[in-house]
Length: 309
Ligand code: ZN
Image (cartoon, rainbow, N blue to C red):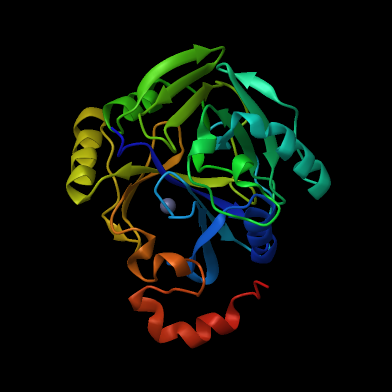
């Protein structure tokens, strides 16, 4: 079960430069891969994560220079949560005020401290206090002491009309189990250290979400390898009547996609081969990496991508 949980979350941002600055400098994540959207190579695909780029630490963005704002609503991911040590809230509250980050106040959810905030393009985020997280390795970023640094993703909150069928997929296919209920929220967990929590809020009759700037595009769940992924695809078809796309090679993982019954796009991504597939661990994110099929167009692609710094 430690190999299950969330692999990555992908969202839509505004201009790339601001996106990069916020996640690396303000939040202190590592840029673990700088590439393009394989299906739309005129735009970046930026991957942020922990020092090793481990599954469960990864938040990725399609930064679009001109994007209309999205709207959270039914059939969308309402919030993406990061793990921080329990004692880190004073530091982050101060940093958000100092950096002009829109934020709420520290609240309690399922007994945990949660601080909600937004990135510059409207993505809803939160920090969740995790006991003993300070003992886990942290990426060193300027002005963020290791004792307070983010330790990967905690999870996501999904907003759907009726969460029952979505929850059944989490438990039957992705290795989660229901652990708690609070109001209209149901919590599902795996044993994974990072990315092991999904909260589902059922809100029948609420406005539907609209994809745009600040929206989560999809949530990817982990499969150990191709065989594990194949087994998940089989279960989706046999037990839930859902078909996935054919497998796509994303260079750092291999993926299939499907829309879950609540309307949210889910992906199943393999842990293999990982982000060190095309550059050494200590150089992750340093250069623009392209898949082999786009290498012949590198000159043209580089000339049209916006400046990052
Ligand atoms: Zn993805």
